[in-house]
Every structure is written in structure tokens, then in C-alpha cells.
Image 1 (cartoon, rainbow, N blue to C red):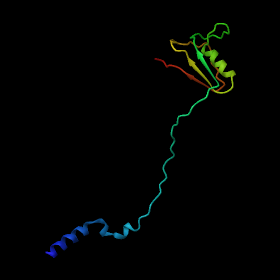
Image 2 (cartoon, helix red, strand yellow):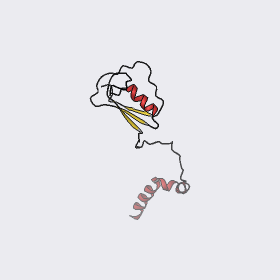
Image 3 (cartoon, rainbow, N blue to C red):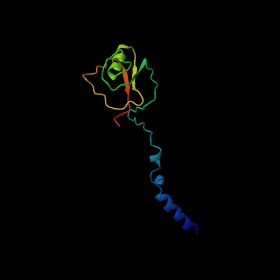
Length: 116
């Protein structure tokens, strides 16, 4: 009976990969493969020097109407130092028709509600 078991053991060990070439496992080296550069988005807080609220759809500049148009808000942001925010008043709905070019010369974020 011992010869039967010996044959089975020999067959099993012959089919094992590590018995075919045991030195191959000793010659393996670890390789370091560099990955591509990765960039992650992060959340940062922004500090604004001034916050201007647009509360009219008219494209006018008037110091006496008690309203702030988009053009006026941009002019205010251009004259103040630092990063400014221009937002739109809640409930302000419609289209602002611009009469001429709007010149932005300073850091400003304009946040609106979109076209819907």
C-alpha cells in the first residue's frame, strides 16, 4: 500500500508549480512602479471683501434709485480691493438685457439662479 500512496504523492507534487522550479521563487524581486500624478478637489472657504446684491433687472447706473443693477454691482466690485461676491435678490426673475460691454477688472464671483 505504501507504493500506491507514494505514487499519488509524487504525481501531486510533480504538478505543483513550485516543485517544477523552486529557485524561481527565490529570484523574485519587488518592483516599484510610479503612478500618474493625481489631483484631488478640496473644499476651501472663501472670504469676500464685499457682497453686492442685484435687485433690479434694469441695466442702469443711478445713485438715487435705491436699487443695484448688475452693472452697478460690477462697478462697485471693480472699485473695491479684494475678492467680491455679486448675488441676485431672492425672487428676482427675468432676463437682464445688457446695453454694452460689462468690464470686470477685479476678482469677483457672480452667483445666480441659472436659466431655469
